[in-house]
Amino acid sequence: MAMSSFPRRGRRAESILLSDAAQLLDASLAGDGSFSFTGIAPVDQASESELAPVASRRYISNLPNSQAGGLLLSDSASRELPAEEVRPRIVVADVHQAMATLLEWLYPPEKSEPAIHPTAILGRGVTLGENLRIGPYAVVEGGATIGDGTSLGAHSVIGSGAQLGPGCIIHPHVVVYPGTTLGAGVILHSGSCVGVDGFGYVFRDGEHQKVPQVGPCIIEDDVEIGANTAVDRGSIGDTRVGRGAKVDNLVQLGHNVKVGPLAALASQVGVAGSSRIGTGAVLGGQAGIAGHLTIGDQAQIAAQAGVIGDVPQGETFMGFPARSRREFLRSVAAQGRVPKLIKRVRALEERLAKMEGKNQEEETE
Image (tube, rainbow, N blue to C red; front, side):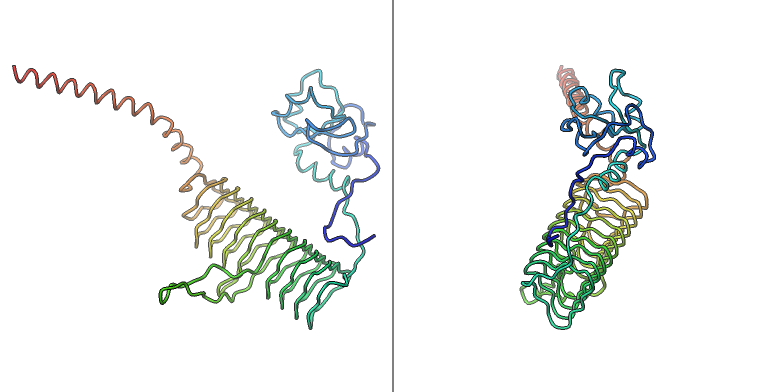
C-alpha cells in the first residue's frame, strides 16, 4: 500500500452483528441480535444499516423520525424509551466509551508501507529508527533523532537536535523546533508548532529587547496536540506537557508552563507563562489562565473563564474573574434580581421625595 502523509482510518467492508457488538462491549442486548450494522451515525442522520447513539434523554424526541436500524442507549435513556420504540438496542453505562470501542473495530487504521520520499531532506548526523514514513518535502535537520515507527507528514520540519520517540504521528506542516523532545506515541496535528520562542522581552533604551529563550520544550508520551496550537519552549527552565494530556486546536501554552498528566485543554485556551495545570485538570474552550498560577489536580475551568488566582484541587471555577461554581451561580442569581431592586429603590426615592415635599409644605404653614 502506498505511503500517505495523513494517517487514515478506512471503514470495514463487513458489518457487525448487534449480538457480537454487545459481547464486545460486555453490554446487555434487547431485541433482535441478528441485526447487522455497518456504521454509527447521529440519530437524525442514521440509515437503516447504522446504529444511532442515544446518550441522554434529550435525543429520545428525535427517535420517531430516525431511520436508524438499531440503537446504542445509555442506562438512563433506556428507562425513558416510549413503549412503541421496539428497535433492537444495546444498553451500556457510558455511550461515549462504547462508541470509542465500536469505532475502533468499524474503522481500523489503514496501513501504509514504511518509506522515505525522495524529496525529503535529511541533515547531517540524523538518527533514523526503523519502519519510518517520511513524506514529501519533509525536513529533518542535523542531529535530530526519529524513533521507530514514526510518521512525518509532508512539509513537516524537525529542527536540529530534536528527539522524537517511537510511534509518533507528525501531520503535514508541523514544526518541531530545535532541541524539542517528544516522547512515544505523540500526535501533532497540522499547523502546530512546539518549542517556539516564548514571549519574553525587556523594555530598554526605548524599545522591546528580546530575552533569549534557552529552556527546552518536552512533550511526554501519548500526548495529542491539535491543529494550529503553539507550545513555547522554556525561558530558562522547561515547558512540559505531561503524559497522556490532550490539547485541542488553537491553544497557546506560554514559556515554562507545566501541564500535568491526563489534563485536557479545549480549543482556544490560553495559558500564560510559568503557570501549572494539575493532573487531570480540564480547561473549557477559551478559558484564560494568567501567569504564575496553579490550577489544582482534577480542577475544572469552565469555558471562557478568566482565571487570575490559584484554583484549589478538585474545584470548578467559572466566570470572570473566575470564582467557585457556587459563588458564580449566586452572583448570577443576584444580578438577575438587580432590575427589581432598582425599581424598588426608585419607588422608595419617589415616596421619600413626596414625604420631604409634604414636610416642607407643613413647615411653611
